[in-house]
Amino acid sequence: MRGWADNPAESFAAAERFVVTNPGVVAAVAVAVLALALGLYALRRFRRPIGARFRGVLANRDRIVVLMHPNPDPDAMAAAIGVACLAEQVDTDAVLQFSGQIRHQENRAFRTVLDLDLERIDHVSDLAAPDVVLVDHNTPRGFGGAGGVLPLAVVDHHPGEGAGEEFTDVRTDYGSCSSIVAEYMQDIGAKPVPPDQHASEIDAEYTVPSTVATGLLYGILADTKHLTAGAAAADFRAASYLSPGVDEDLLDRIANPQVSAEVLEVKARAIAGRKVEGSFAVSDVGQLSNVDAIPQAADELIQLEGITAVVVCGEREGTLYLSGRSRDDRVHMGRALEAAVSDIPHASAGGHARMGGGQIQQGTALPGGANGGGGGGGAGSVAEQEPVSRAEIIERIFRSMAGDV
Image (cartoon, rainbow, N blue to C red; front, side, top):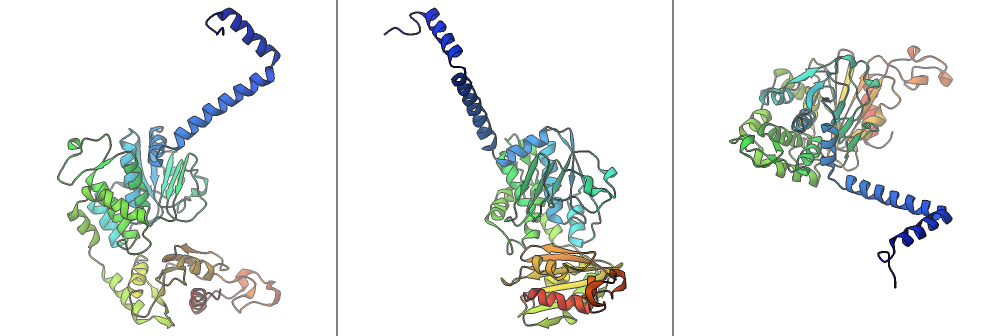
């Protein structure tokens, strides 16, 4: 049988005749080959570990802003320094920014002990670069013009609809955002640097400096109550991965900061003034200057024997702040608080199953006379209704925890 090599000229002529007489078949084959090539490219691209993909997004930018949520906690700050660490190792400048304040003693200790360079912003014009990476939240908030920010990337573990233009990784089953960032590091083969060594002594293209490893571990511990609440298997794996680089002295200094007298007083007021219905407790601690004392008081109250779900509320500058904790499978605290304030104007709430929070602008009223102060049919304006009383809010919280709202 004669083959292609026996008479190449004749073979080329035959191929040319086939192309001319069967253009549809040739086009279909060409499309199939192109689709196969694109499919193989996509498969190769998306089979890469997600940390490698995130590294690629960062490497394509000269400068980024790593933006934390307002009043950042250890998990937010840890995730931010982890992302910045990865960015700088691919020659991308990173600026860490936040809105609000850092007031909680644990948060201040985290920032001080790790010597973090964090910039506070009030307006979108304060952002140090157009490319923004959100960590530990998925929708920009807390500063003027936040609604107009389209993030480059989002890395978070909270529920929400926010997304990044080029990269979105929201894992609500993880206990902390720090675990996600630690996983990125592990994906690219980064090695934690022991506290008694320098990065130059480590045989690896990428490293996790000891301060970053320590921060990420504390971020995991802080958001999972030391791996006892809401922790997933991934949080344990991340903690194990980071452990060789953890500086125990720095960790102890962050974990055991001095506590202000007001925080202790608010905790005492929460315990003494608690109202209990069954295994649920709500406590109004009144006026205070440090709102970070409210979640700390909730952490204390949930430890009381016989109590399975608690909410502590307190007021500062016309805003009532709510903080809840639950170890009761019947009470999803984030949903309970959200339901309790759902029809109150200028109120918001949410969170996870085990913890949640919310804010209510004092002096606002229920629409349509729902608070008992309006007329029939809801004809009056909200401004004409009676403001929602603290007693009514507390009753709503109890009903919501009991599933009656």
